[in-house]
Image 1 (cartoon, helix red, strand yellow):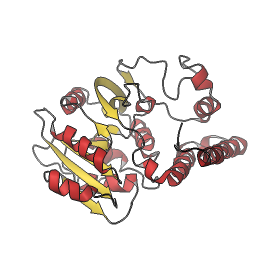
Image 2 (cartoon, rainbow, N blue to C red):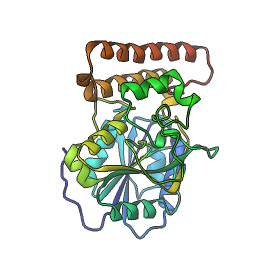
Image 3 (tube, helix red, strand yellow):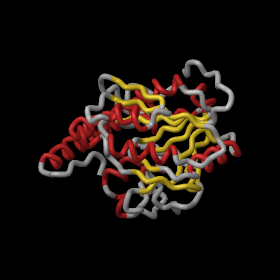
Image 4 (cartoon, rainbow, N blue to C red):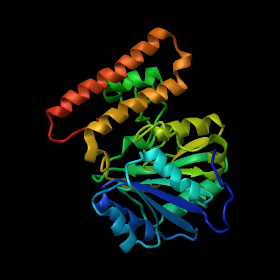
Amino acid sequence: MLRNTKISDGVDLSVVIVSYNTRQKLQMTLESVFRSQTGFFYEVFVVDNGSRDGSPEMVRTEFPQSKLLAQEENLGYAKANNQAIRLSRGRYILLLNSDVIVKPSTFDKMITFMDNNPTVGISGCRVVKPDGTLDEACRRSFPTPAVAFYRLSGLSRLFPKSKIFGKYNLSYLPEHELAEVDSVVGAFLLIRREAISEVGMLDEDYFMYGEDIDWCYRVKAARYKVMYVPLTTVVHYKGSSSRKASSRSLYEFHRAMEIFYDKHYRQRYNFLVNFFVKAGIWARYTLKFLQNSLRTEKYVSK
């Protein structure tokens, strides 16, 4: 559970940014954060996971108002976020990737939404890629065996408007429409402090994928809503950290699938279903590993 849950007066939002060798994009992210125009008071934590590109020095020099936690090694995304969350004071905590650009009004709109909707435990805004297209991961369903099969088999791509086959990324929903969803993406995930007090911190068994959807699962199980809130839009330069260690990233992506399945679904299904799910996860890993060995640009989840 969350330690030191007492909230200091006046702090509305704690922004937590974990960085690993993303100096240039981290600089852009922090510039956008400190351009925010809001009446809410916020604090900013930067947790550097052992970068060797000068990121900590840049933060100290250019953004001294940030609270920098510089690690000697890569602790993983969940553990690094948890370190800052334990020190945070805000009524809300925002997980923000080091390669996401926010608008000046983003914090104001999202905090106002959360204040007006006390049954919402987690919210995420509209997230787009640099070319303006929707980052489909910003609103998702939980990966049950059926939903995962539709995704991995390609049926979700063939029938994106189907409420059955398009369920993984909810591709049948209008992207500018407010919606209750199962999960939002950790690149921009706003959570209510009371929800953390009830369900606990990010699960540190996950290294760099899966912790966001796991948190959403636990928050919904505690009877809070998870909402996709397209009142504002942020830009996500996806994969900036994972490309620095693509083989490790690919492995951790699939290991996260297995952890999530074992934690939330394995007890619901028989041996045969569990066997085929695990076989499918690691068969996909093998295929992607072989494909990446022939590519110049590596992919984790494409």
